[in-house]
Length: 485
Ligand code: AMP
Ligand code: ZN
Image (cartoon, rainbow, N blue to C red; front, side):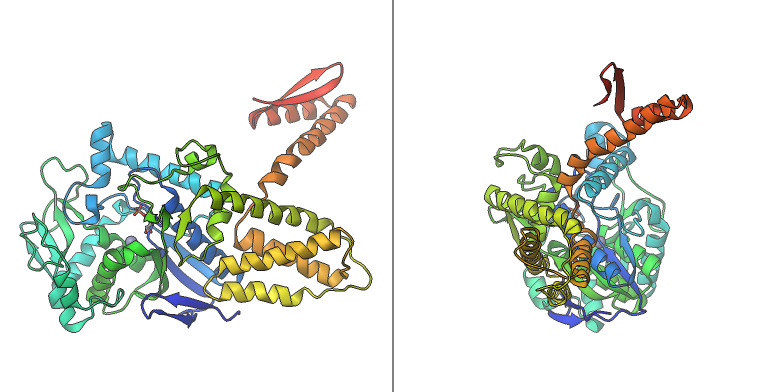
């Protein structure tokens, strides 16, 4: 196993990764709230965790990757006040909340597929785990760290902090947190300023609600992740992740809930991705500066000069380390487009290179540098710089300026394959579109052969099969042609 170092938000340093039960790794990542389209910022976070998932898998770990879907309990403004984001949207659109959830979950999956992000091992929903959440509230109440007021249940932060460190994740002490928290209106039920809801009694007209021992209501947003991570990964697991914006509240409260219920820190490594920004400001739905992936692909946005392919956008994101901010600009995307084409051209050339009997280059040291980059807290920009060095070598061999022997050629081809396809999760969009006509011509020739042998069953099967996947064949005196239906 490689010596992998991960930056841990909890200890604020890079630590050698040690799985609790190798080769198994449990990883939980907070997923999207499915009340509107995911924007590119959200995509950056999920692409970053896909990189981590892919690399751990490549190293031989058996990763159970749990990424939830928030389909209840996330209120406007991320506080315990206001309307549920999904219910509000449903009312506006005159739809069932579950229609909203279904639409945006399907859309989210499609976008993830376009970015070639692998699905997680388990994708649990908040609404599917109401019982587990109620059970968790009961345990926290039994431990005396929560209280009920008028059918709602709140976590008692100050009492919890007497024996625990509430601000452990963001390295703040309770006094500073109390001093820096505004007293929000409508929170009179809470005993303390930092207390947060575990269960909220539904107001009249609230759409998504369930019976509980305290009231007909719904769980607080932070509770779902504590309940679902515990259910699928156990009381203690390896990695917990999400965007950096989740650390001060959502993850801080998640830790408090798990510690209160089980007496254990839920995850050993807390990993946070940095934000995608526009002119230095966090991309967010509420700030109105967000880009939808489709707008980027089509170029249909006032801040864009043109459209960019999904893999160009993904490559642009991977050229920054996940813990650095990444600012969105036309110039940066154009540079990434050139870089991505350079990488993929060399990638297409590499399998066809010919080995010489005596070579002039050793590839192993370069392969080792690729691993060193990823072992240093998944440093994808450094990895990409090493891959560009590999492109230079590929082009020199192709131009007959450099010789490589068979064993080094195999190492080069394998390194390219592993790091570009399996780990960065890039796809050769250009090659795929170039190859399609060749594949279709090949299939058309097979059909012509079947026809000339009077095997009409096979020839019809080919024609209908192509039709069913969107290609219409047309026979004429000149031969057979195809068109996309
Ligand atoms: P949400 O659907 O708002 O709950 O967000 C889903 C995930 O996207 C969370 O992990 C957020 O931290 C993350 N996220 C939100 N905005 C950005 C952004 N501008 N850049 C990177 N990640 C983000
Ligand atoms: Zn969460």
